[in-house]
Length: 344
Image 1: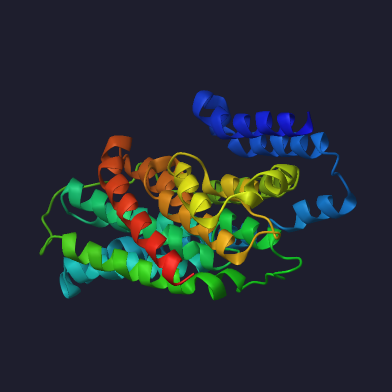
Image 2: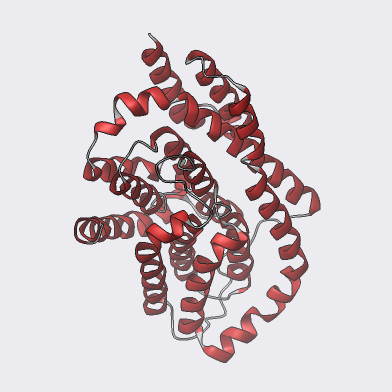
């Protein structure tokens, strides 16, 4: 009965945000409530869990808050100088630098701020709409990959590190970087080279994509609070879903976990990480889960935070994103699967 209840909770967590608009708008509160229910159903409430759920979100929340203020200060200089830099180094090299630098920096400035910087820069470019959409999708793939390298990069990396902090992995700040950099860094540069190849030779003086509204100080504060409750909810969900992980997911081989996580294209990858990762898993299983979530998460707009921010602010349609993201994501999934087999 307990496992049945958890499966019902899991189904509600994964499907309700797509069915009820109010839940989609208040996702953090919804996930927090479902996390509390999951922990209650499995009778796992204790002071240690409460302390962990209160403390674990602090680091990424402070990073999002601080980086948000720094970005607000730099927002105007960025806007005023984008096209000067483009004219100086050319559109193709600029596209490469944009994609690679945001991917590498996202684990430090967070995926959220990296996406906001992307939106600001794209809004200032004067390229064809289709060219700018291609650059946005490639950059979001890059940001999604790069942000996993530290626990402050995105909620997925925060929750993965938290769940692996104990024995046998004793995951610290650089645990994910240590085990994933040889997959992540080449991937970021590959997206950069693709952007360079696709970008036009010159600026085209077209209207392109434009940001719908710039953030103010209130937006920065609200975003940080939402991140705090989102990560708190993931901690509770991860604890609540532990019986499902122990009973079923631990038995799935690494290649099954990898391809199973293509559902990350339409479901939040941090929530899936909370429901799947366990310290009882082998390292190859953990790598497969994370890489499957990260790559598939770039295929469609709901897959990860950078996609949602960029598409929302730049008014990119789901069909426009999918035309680029789905074939690209499938090709990258195939390449990384081969790498997992031979590199591990």
